[in-house]
Structure formats: structure tokens, C-alpha cells
Image (cartoon, rainbow, N blue to C red):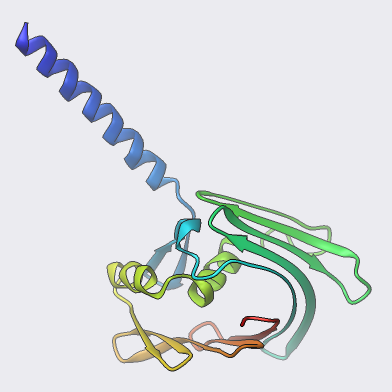
Length: 185
């Protein structure tokens, strides 16, 4: 009788662990470098909840973009409503542990919303958990004062400077910069 119970126990443990592995295998990710695959962190790792209007100004190459957003982020997930300067909805992005959805009549369908979530997490998520996740993929996180720097070896790839009213995000590797203005106190 005991071997049957042991067999059932081992079978159920194998089944449970294989389900956990496949669920984690489907977790959204982005490449922070060409070979550093960053798996998005769970929502519970947010540093501080927020529910606020934000103004985003971004530049990539010679292009400049300006977007208003309403951002609600807490341990249950991230919601972003993107608005043009007239207050018209131009996109909605949602992230809740393992699921990212994005809809927009304006942005191209090729836009991967996971990259927006990753940048948000790099800026606003728990630095201890963020540091561990980055170490797992060969990157390092340095925090001095209100600035987060992410390195690949000695090369600075991302720099995030935070104040009470703004976040300056510079991706040195990919060549884009943006500023988020809001009440981050």
C-alpha cells in the first residue's frame, strides 16, 4: 500500500512543479540587452502604490513625443490610460501578474507593451528584488541617492534619476530618453 501512496505523491508533485514551470515559462519578458532576457516582476514588488496623472515627454533619435497618462499601479497590477493633449484616449495598457494587454487606435500593433512595463518596473519596483532579477541575467543595479543605474559589466545601459516630481529615464543602449512628470512623493 505504501508504494502506491508514494507513487501518487510523487506524481502529484511532478504535476504541480511542471505546471509552475510552464506558467513561469509563459511569463512576459523583454531583452534589456541583446542577450539579457528580463522576466517581468510580479505586481507585488511595486515599491509604492500610485494613482495619478503623469505627463510624459520622450525622444528617440530626432523624434519627440508628448503624452498624458493616468497611471494606477499597486500590488494588483499596472493600468495606464494614454491621452493626447486634448484628453482623447489613445491607448490603454494593463499588466497583472503574467498578462499584458494593450489596445490603441494610434500606436502601431508592432509595439510590444512589455517594454513599457519593464521600464516602469525598473523605475518604480522594489530595488532588492529588481537587483536580484537583474543579477540572474548578467546585469547589475547600482543605486546612489535617487539614481538607479543598470550595468552590463562596466557598460552603463540604463540610468533612472528620480525626484519628488519627475523621473528621467535614459536608455543608453537603445538610444531613447523620456521624462515623466508627476507627484512621486
